[in-house]
Length: 360
Image (cartoon, rainbow, N blue to C red; front, side, top):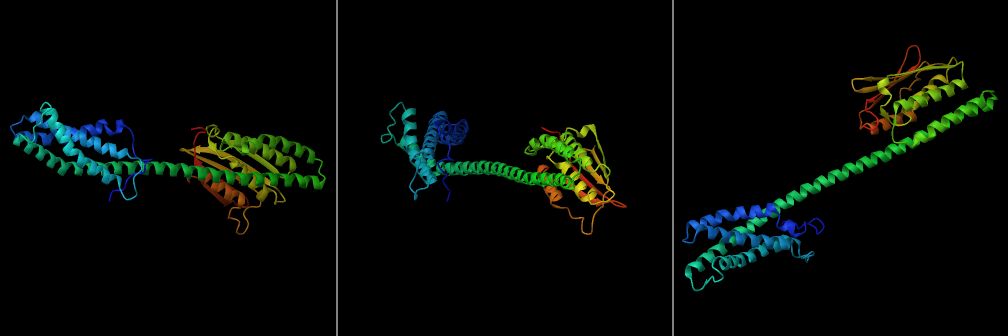
């Protein structure tokens, strides 16, 4: 059984019922029947073509009318059944109208045996073939509707997936914010507790840094140029806290400045190097930040000469795990974060992702 489309999915309006595509199909389907009737009759072929086309057009009107009305049907009556019945009823009515128009308004069917025979043959042929043509049209229409709905569902699904990814990216980004802020405040607290005369200067630098950084935390994306500015401010802040134990250098290709990346990308790597590499080391160490563009890929490295990886330390912590997932979401899985130990000690964190311009 052919299912009836829901009222909301059915097309409406006379423009749809008498669309050029439907009219063309109806007239072309009626033409060969008119030619066949004309060959076997003394009536001119042009008259028979006109009659079959009139029957076809009336059947088309009946098919289209009951395609739209009534809007709601009883549960036991399928719309496609109603349309086929309407086509069957429309055929003899259309045949009588065709004879009435082609005989000057006086068909004389009962008085003229040849006309009656032709009328009955026209009705029989129409009832035999018209419902099958209507059925084929309905199947084709429902196939087109199914394809359209499938495309709509696919677009809706893609949009929902994109929204879900955006929501998860914002959630992961929200997790980064307190992680970074609490770590930085803990460093300032350590200076204050130790009574360091540099505590006030470090706190001033922290306030200046946060004024520049916090407004960017909620942004969905930033550029590597902005990230490098934050990294420099952070490293200068950490250098004030431990001037004899932390040294750093930054280098970035000019082409990398405008590339997009999630906020806190480089900063997470640098903070991890300070917290887990330089801070635990009595001698301190050096942090080197480099960003290069190679064959359409951006490669960012953060190297520290701190204590290096501990036993089992090849597994990333919360910050790096969150960063890895954020990068995967931001670049549709086309990003890679690797952590490796250096000899004699130290760690190299390398991040690779597509070199995409911000706003592209």
